[in-house]
Image (cartoon, rainbow over all chains, first blue to last red; front, side, top):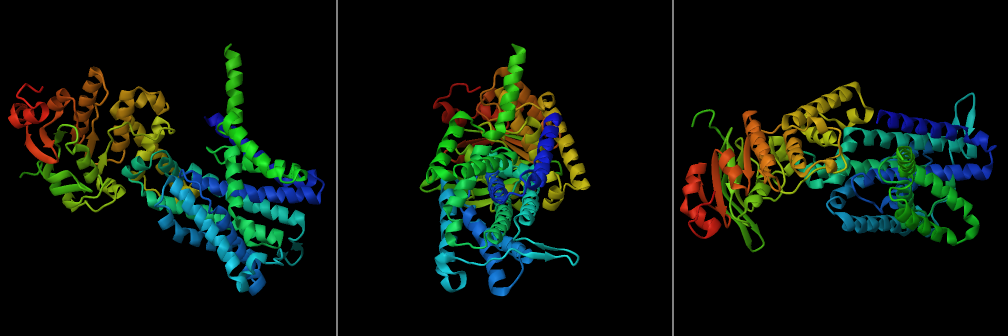
Length: 323
Length: 261
C-alpha cells in the first residue's frame, strides 16, 4: 500500500514537473500552448465534477456553474474595471454561493432526479445569461475580456501572452487538484465516499448527510467557477453557449474515460481526450462522434477507466510470474 | 426505581402509520439501562418499524420516544446517533468498497473531533486524532473478534463476520444503547453462539441492547426481558420463562398451544 502511494506521488510530481517544462519542450509553440491551456481548464472542470461524484452524484449543472464564475469575472472587468486578480475569486465565490443556495433543494433529490434537476439548473443559468441582454449581452455574450497585466514594478507581466497565461493556468489547476486531492484523502472525503457507498448507514453512524452533500457541491462549484473565470479571460469573449450542457457532458466523459475512483482518473481522462479532440480537429463533426465511440469503448473494454491500467498491467505481470 | 435500573429508553403511545396502514398502534415500551431486551413477533408485527422509528429513519406519526430523558422522535438519524443510540440493519449493511478497518474508522465519526479545515490542511492535531481513531477502530474490531481481518475487504469475509462487522461499526460511535436487527439471521449454530457471547459482552461493557431475532434459542438464552409484538401492538412482556409459558404468544406464533422453543 505504502509502495503504491509512493508511486502515485512520483506520478503527480512527474506530471507537475512536465507541465512546468512543457513550454520549453514545445518551443513556445503558440498552438501547442493553446492546447495545453485548454487541457488545464478541462482538467479543472473534470476534477471538480469528480468531487461531486465522490458523493455518488453527477451534476449536469457544472457547465452553467462554470459560466457563473466566467460571467461574474468578465462583467466585473468590462463594466466596472475590476481586475481579474480580484474578479476570478469573486466569480468563484459567486459560483460557490449560488451552489450553496441551490444545493439545499437540489440535494434532496436522488439518482436520476438529481441528474434531471441539475441539468435544468444548468439550462436555466445559461438562459439567464442570454435573457438579460442589456447587462450580459444576450446570446452575443461579452467581448473584450482582457487578460490582466501584473505590474511588479521591476517587471510587468502581460497575461495575454500565452506562455504567461499557461503558467497562471497551471498554478490555478494545481491549486484545484491539490484542494480536491486533500479533501479526498481526509476524513471529509471518507464521509463523501461513505455517503456514496451507503447513504443510510452513513446517516446512522452520525454523518449529517445533507450537510456533507452541500459542502461537497459548494466546494466543487467554487472550483468550477474559478476555472470559468480563467476561461473567460483566456478566450477574451464568452457567450451563453460556451456554458451549456456540453461543457458538463465533456467533463463527464473525461471523468469516465479516466476512471472514477481516484483524482488521477479525471486528470488523465481530461488530458488524453483533449489531445485526441485536438488531433481530430480536421475530422469536423466526427470529433463528437469519436467521443461517443471512445466512451462506449472504455466502458465495455476497460471498465474502471485509464486509471485502472497500471493495476491491470501489474496483475497481468504477476500472473505471468506465477505461471 | 434504583439507580442501576434507570430508564434509558421510553416509548410512549407510539403510532406509526404509512398511508392507511397502521404498522405500530399505540405502543408503549420501557428499556432499562444495562438490559438486554428481546423483541419478537411474527412477520409484519412492526418490529423493524419500531427500530426505524427509534433510530429516526421514519418519523413517528404520533407519540413520544425519549432516550436518556430527551425527546428524540423529531430528530434526524445522525442526531439520534449523536445522542448515543446506534443500530444495525436486517441485511448486511457495510461500506462495501472500504476495508474492514476503514469501515470502523468511518464509524468513529462522532468521536473523532472532526473539523473540515483541520482535515483539509492535515494539521498535526488532525493526524493525531485520525491515528487515535484508527487505534480505537482496531480495539473495536478486537472486541468483536475481527482484529485479525482488519485489512481485508468485507466482501471476502464470511457472512457471519460481515454481520459482526456491522455491529463493530455501530459500536464505534460509542453508544449507550444498541439496536440489533436480527443479528443471527443466516448464521449457523456456532456463529449464533458466538453472537450470543458477543451480545452479552456488549452489555457487560455498559451498552444496553435491544434485539429483534427470529431464532428463539438465541432470544431465550440472551435476553433479560422479552417484548412480543403482533399487528403493531404489544401482546406480552416478561422474562424468557414467562414468555415461553404465555398462551397468547403461542397463539400468535403458531395458532395453537404447541411448545414454542
